[in-house]
Length: 216
Image (cartoon, rainbow, N blue to C red):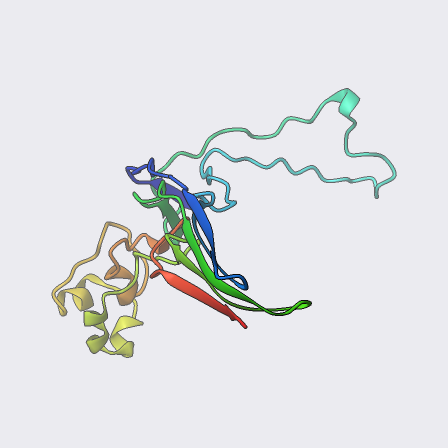
C-alpha cells in the first residue's frame, strides 16, 4: 500500500475549557450544570506505510528443526535490503493518503444540566440531562477518492466490466489512462486508475454526532 501525504493543516487551536456551576434555589433545591471541551489524538493508531523501503528476510530450516536456522552469535544471514522505489510498483493495488485536515484534533463537547430536590430527610430526587457532541472524529478509510463517477453507471455493467481497450474507450469518449494499462473500463475511468482504492488513513468526513442521555 502506498501512502501519499498531502499538505497538512495543523490544528493549533486545541483549547479545552471546562466550566461548571451549582446554585441553591431555596433550602431544598440545587441546580448544577457544566460544559467542557475535550480532544483526542488526531491520528489513529496506524503506522505510516513504508512501501518500497521495507524488506523481510526469510530463512528456511532444512534440518527438520534439528539445528537452528542461525544463532545470534553467528549473526543474521545476508538477505536483500535493496529499496524498490518505482512509481509503478503498486499499480493495481490499494493506495492511501493523509488528507490536509489530518492535523485537526477530534473534538468532543460535553454539557450537562441537573436539578436536585430533597424530598425527605433521606430521599433526594435528581433529574439530569447529559449530552456529548463529537466532531472531526477519526474513521480510517472512511473516504475513498478513487470511486467511479456515478455518471458512468449509465454505460451499463456489461460495458463497465469489459476489458478496457483503446477502441471501446474511444467509443465512450475516453482513452487508455497510460501506456500498458490493464483492467476494466470501470477501472480506466476512475480518477486514479492505477489504484484499486485510494483511502484516507485519518478521514474526518463524518457529520457531527450528538449523544444524549437523560437521567431521571
